[in-house]
Image 1 (cartoon, one colour):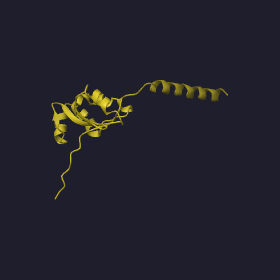
Image 2 (tube, helix red, strand yellow):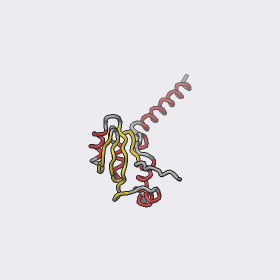
Image 3 (tube, one colour):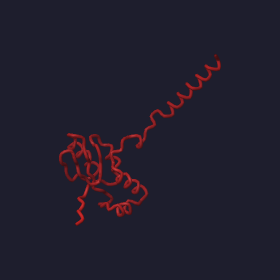
Image 4 (spheres, helix red, strand yellow):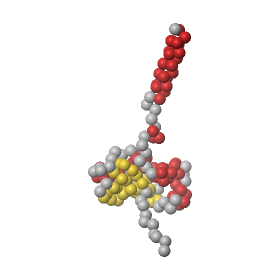
Length: 131
């Protein structure tokens, strides 16, 4: 009986230790990131002082350390997202559930946390058809 009880006690202690060690352990990677992959890479390049080179290689137009983004909003949230986004950069326009803004690379993570945003991406440019 003591043998079984000691195993049960050890398992219980182990579960308690695991639960305490993981409680409240969330970080940016644990939350949903609304930035597209290119913007995430641009942020990493900026952190390493290589944003200009990354932008050049990826044909991304930087505007004095800022980048133009398209913010896809949840239905009916474009106006409130535009107001919030204006604290992080320059809002250029709003149409339906989309906001276009120029945002410093260093503010992209903060913009990612604004309520009402579904996705933040680079503008799509039309592709010319080959003749």
